[in-house]
Image (cartoon, rainbow, N blue to C red):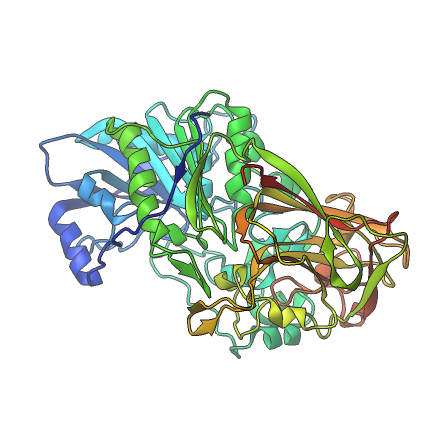
Length: 617
């Protein structure tokens, strides 16, 4: 809440050398003692916890806690982790590191529940949720672990980021600093769903491995799913409707996957798995961290920060976003796919943001210099600081879809539309190469493969006369029609590089590169309500409006801004049959049909993209 804005240009930093894994674990073993304990919760369930304490007893140390469903091994008493804490800087700095299997996972007792709903009322002293499990854990630690200084921090990436956010609610008084990193926030809009569209390979990969039901405590990981082909496009086409993933492959071994199929709308099941309204009474200092190219939890980054900011006035609450994929800040992140970002941004973050944050609030060490929002500006490739996010110095801009593929600030004429045929049997791929999973690189991939398809509408500006920096949300506001009764609408914002660009990355010339900057999908049936879906009336113009998540990206002078619009994005999202059915997941093969989609661009039926730019340029 906070300080004046400043600009910090990225300078080269030496990445940490990573020795062989066995050497790392030997170093940890030399410096730390390891102890496994079963910590009792208020309902009597015991959670398996491993504590690494420094052997140096000449000083007292803060504790860093991670709660996770993904395992905290090695579980054997004589085997040690290869790294402790968020980065290698931490075990050198001196902390007590605590790792815990959450309830019902791995070696912990109890029953696991995905995104366990937060209790708003407690009728018994034994009532529990993830915030009470964090509270009870910290309470036991401060009473039973020797050599600590009374201060506890919590951090975690992705699902552990959710547990970190939950731990901030009505927090234990000894919890002084929390860093939810790429946290899951609301599962209907984050991770597996985007405006009601199902991110299919990401969900299936998860539930076919980490999401399988546990029959008993274990220390063994589930093996990865054995795809019969490397070609995910063909695999998922062959599967057919989403229901077949369970019938052919999961075979009811994942209860939560079946629950997903049973709840296609934003009903009470999903609303209970939205932690954002509960982020109140947050006392610790908070640093939410994420990456612009997080293909999994981009929604959770911004909405967690915003919910804490809105519901806890006066606390220390900051946001850090870098040029990273999911969890990319834990390793060298000088590029993603074919797009380079200059020096290793992760090394800067680990030292100047993450270590500095925990050292200040848990050790009283160093001056607190973190700004309200420490953001990496892609395109210009530099770190920037803002006193608020989104920044205050913004100017609204609108780009209209025009004739002949033009994207312009000039309002359209009296008539105009573009149409394309969308065939769910020949969907638009989301990448040009072959993969079975949701690739992280799709977030920066060259989009020329899509531009060439007849079922993708393409609009672009003339070469820019000067730099243009987009900051904050982008809004797609379309007027559309379809010959069917349902449709998905995908909007992508793309940075088109000049044809004279000399740079080569990964052996690929960047001349004319169409860099994916931001995209989003709206499942058309949810255009008015995520709770009550509604069919389209065939051939009737209809407004479809939705936000794309935040950006901080500079389109350099000479570049173009491009917008692509299409209705399939496969297999990243499941196919819409384009015939309205009560539950798309249980559609039959016969329900899938081709449809002609129209995007209007006239004075009365205006389709456009709205965004904000920094005025300082």
